[in-house]
Length: 180
Image (tube, rainbow, N blue to C red; front, side, top):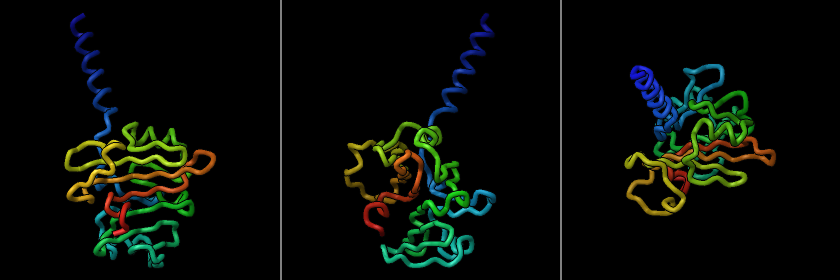
């Protein structure tokens, strides 16, 4: 009897720990080619390295943003990746390193990133994580000024009229708010 209680407690701990969302690091702000796990573009990566994978981009004249033929858009700060946007054209070519893809349902997004979202609107689902406090940001805290907005990691997902992912943005709060 005692062994079975200990076994149940152990299983409960494993299940509870495994389902907790550990937050978002800069490693989560990355995309990979669907067919090549080693072809990764990540937040903080140099523009030179990003363009080795994506090819040459076209300046879209919004901040320091460039569009690539694969449907990927990259926002640079000091020639380093500070934002990644997957558009509908990237479907079947790129996904986030967490497995989020264009075309997924909102429920599938929540299965990947959990229910600690900043905002859940009809056509938008946002996750913001403060890497200093190691906590997800709540909607009431989003507007607060902090010393370094690059420490707030953001995953923003937009949905089409059918509730399927049509755009994915991986960035920090500074880039999301100012394009710088």
